[in-house]
Length: 196
Image (cartoon, rainbow, N blue to C red; front, side):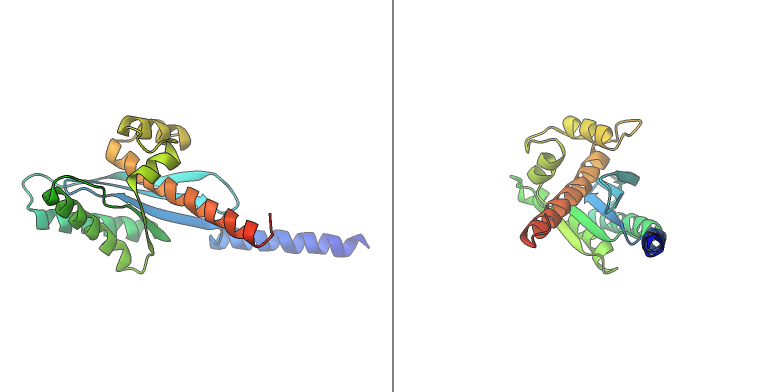
């Protein structure tokens, strides 16, 4: 009578191993904090059955002041395409446009966002946008957090050995916000379906 139970356990363990090998339970997020001269980026990974989130890479796409605006946009797009090709993310999370008093700044920021969004969208990667206040609230607990607070929390949450540069930390925060919002949405779906 115990043999069928042993067979079932063995079957379930084999299924779990196959899923882990296939990467079926993993999600990779490319997250972007756009800027013309400094665009922060990160690729984060989480296994669905765990809360552990790892930073696979993060950094800043820097465009020197000698480059024209169009050359900066090409640089952003090229660098992010390289990141996408290397890490093959499932989704892309981008910080949405913030309110700025200067229309010129808004247009420039929008163009930088567009360069990053096109890099992901041209490869069929779904794009998710998050307001800066929502990102800070998800990571720090308050929407008016300062850049230093965000960077400190990123270091603590991901157990990094050093604090990342602020633009990279902001990109990581956007990715974390995506994971947190995604987790909340799954919990709501489970609640509505009566699975909780």
